[in-house]
Image (cartoon, rainbow, N blue to C red):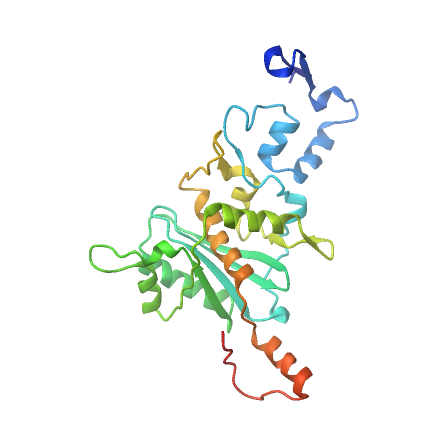
Length: 277
């Protein structure tokens, strides 16, 4: 790799010639340093800033530039029963690669802990797989399902993805939102910290497709538009429905309601878990 890249277009740079040095020009920045430093940057961010490749100037560039493996990923991030038995699922009904993302959320923290990423599967089969997977991996949990609102659109036989979910006893919830609205909420939670860790974190082993998209595979074109490539957009969309749903959900879980009533009335109901929303 050459140690520098010259930008000889003086017209675009106020008459100056720009000189960019590759990190290898610094003798202290060894391969060992580079291998460690890469963990703190999204793939495309590393290529643009350190390898001096024209990412984002002549071609596509990553959406989540603040996402870093060393900060946002943890293979030990799993369901914690001590934190509650409420699991959120985000559904994207992609035609080729439908995806369901699982998260445990408490306080300001949103932990992405599992995913199902399929290939050309019918919605009935997808729902059955999600139900089976949920029962095995999250026993005795309550699930809240946030979905793409386009799932209410009916086909020529009057069926829809949401009606299919309801047929299996699920209660899908959706919010009308723009893609950019959801992305901004997720980007905010990537930089906000709670006790030293980001609000948003991901288990890369359990959520390999979502992690890859976060690292830089989910991109914008040179015009700034989201690239819907049919591969990386589905896991992000599923997470986006979940994330914004949780962020705007004003309901409280049973533990919060019991504690509030105890604080206010010095007692709380001993039975029942119905919470008015």
